[in-house]
Length: 67
Image (cartoon, rainbow, N blue to C red):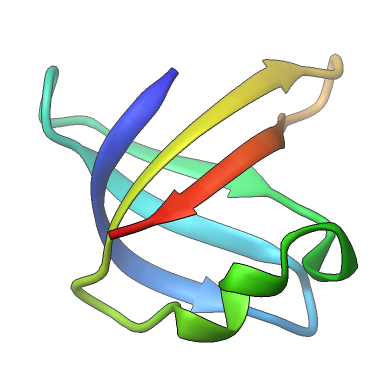
């Protein structure tokens, strides 16, 4: 699970970059915007909590909460 602030996002490429608040590392996590209607609330600085699995190339979100 990841939790942190959005540092960049691209709805067309379908990924979020965030700085995890636990380890202070940056992560890029891909997601399907059609699966997460709350993604329309994203902006730089949004705090998000998400679960993601690694598919061999990158992290892919399975849940997304925007706070």
